[in-house]
Image (cartoon, rainbow, N blue to C red):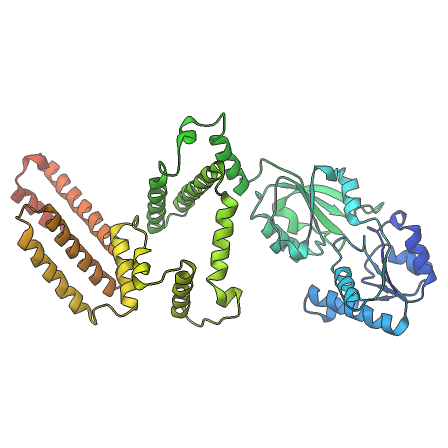
Length: 480
């Protein structure tokens, strides 16, 4: 049998009688580490033991350390019979080597006896007078990058062994908390004469000089800390609630559907301006629209924000088999090609025409035109050279000339549309975004128009009082 015992948080008072008796009765004692205050007691009692401290020096990662310990314990059990494995704290609290050992013993049908112990969590909660009924989260510092922090409950972070780990912990916490958040630095919790608990701002965590293997930190519940995703969920719920905003309560999917387009274009403007603060603000506005529609869906009983998030997570995983699966993609072209194939399969698009029809009608016409042309080009329906697309512009322009004096507005609309479509085709061939190109020209027009207006004022004149030729003369000057 393999006996697994805990040595408690460090004080002799926390050592259980059962643990002491079991250790004294056995001769095959293995300690994960001798860096624990109660180890001196074992030595004073004349108890011989073997420790795995050398594994920390010989291994490249903590996972490797714990795996090596678990495997060696099985080997020792096979050679020696009954053994005792002692770990700091409680064997089942933040003790990775025990987790691995239990899994291996289960596979090999080896009996394990676990003796309960006082954990460092007990010591920390006692020292800080924390009632766990209010909610508590316990995190291993080595796993913090895989954790999601929540300001709504207190959080204990264990095994903050040194300043490097403290720095990693600090950087991860700063993704959720403000840098001046008041936290508790806890060292040697539960050990008389050496226990040290003090409040420090989060940004000073890795500057503490007494960080060691007995260090933990505690972040208290703080609802007023940085706003997060769930704050936004609550705000929208309040706005749509009984005592919320009259305007917000009146809205439905149709009434606000244009807003998400407007907000998206404001994001593009912010990106073009390279204005980080503006990007933050405008992305927030887009997120608000997503959340608003999700709240409406929740109220109507059809979907909520979790459905939206779940859908996009599943879609991204499914469309990246080269990342989340076994397939290989060695170029962006391969990724795009596979993406399109997966998308066609997901959306059950049978024909080439289905693919074209699936492009959203609500897209701005220039963008939609370019997307349709790209899809058609993928099956070979395209000009071989850009000159063919350019000649098409002249052809369509002549068609407009033939009909523009007529009374058939539908025909004129059709021919003007053909002309615009052919211009987009040339832009696509030249790898020029037609939206950007047109906006560039619009901005240029506005700048030149402003030049005209200012020059007119310098001449004590007003544009509306000038002839076209006079304005055109100023326009030509604006180009210089």
